[in-house]
Image (tube, rainbow, N blue to C red):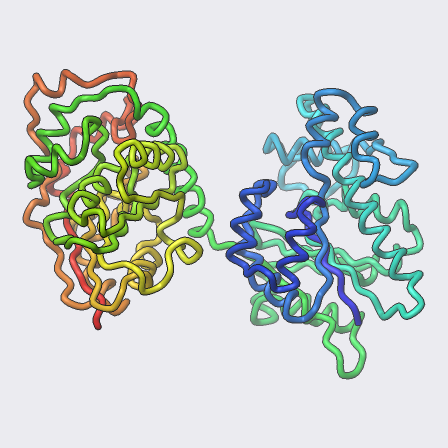
Length: 543
């Protein structure tokens, strides 16, 4: 048998990238990096890692399935005729962008959140029970139909090409598409069958009702829909049994398992929340990076840094824009950076602590800064070049540094205020352990919650929701293999009595992250020193 997998996650112009991955020229991590840099249609590939890796191992034919979005934009801005002409290589000669009112109803409901049924509890789908959509999305709907037409044409051409091959094998075509196509058989499925009505008897719709991401459509019988639900899960045991049995009964031949390539994706809610947290964090600090060149309050920065134990030498080494200091402690106290060492600053922000580390490690050493914010990274890189520092800055997620920082390459890792923003602390600390040289050390200043924790039901800022309990830090580090783990909470108080005349010097034009609006006025009623603690995590990687 020969299996073709068509994914709407990849636009047609990314086929070369997919081919390089399938030919083992690049690995999954590089595929993801290039995918996001070239345009990712808003998708995450991590949930599809197993499918893509298996596809490579099994020699599956993987196809990019979506029209590049530039043609959809052209249709919306310039009209249908120029868009169809520009995208003609991806479309059938008799292209038809007509679509049913029901399809628009489904499409509009997905964007607006409106139930397509007048009675949300109704299981009926006849016209009398449908609620009326607004016309708000008519223009963008036409662009969606253009994409559907192109994807349906690709699938049709693949099927016809294989049917015409002299040595054609028993082909299967698996289309991975979103619920907009699957739940009501609109979009791509209906257009494929419109061009290939003879396939109606060989088509099966497979829907995973409990997933939060994509489901799969494969070949089978048109009069059956295999629907996997929590209720069926309890009846049949582990995930996917219903679909495996269903597909095996329809495709199975003795000695074969047609369900080898059947995947059910349920992205855990906590993973989706982690993605959302990172996106919100990135956006917030990108705004800070945009205003980093606006002069700030150096007196306030000096007062805070001195209270945290920074020396006069370190303060002046930071540079004239020391007002861009971001941190909750002083990682240099425990890092004890030596001349010539390679230093990694995790969550380097605007580069203040990295600059201090550069002056400590000297010209024979090197400092590498990583941060999730592109704008802050650009600012840090620019100032490093201006000051002729041996420092390199890059956009990188501390939970996944594998493509940027080699294993066993770093002498000492510092971080100041970034770890409290990492959604998955274990993944972040595991990455620190990986990149450290044997005998290397970490000095991580972060904010934690005390034993009492945060009161449930209270609206806490995003950053506070991600604080790790202080008492969890040492066991976590030791579990990952760190030794000589110390949690220094000698300077743990959250509150600082900064003189009024210093605070008043702040520049309102500068973007700030930790300044709450009226939504957080209620926090004034809480004793933050009783709830939270600033600490420094100190540990080593054994020789």
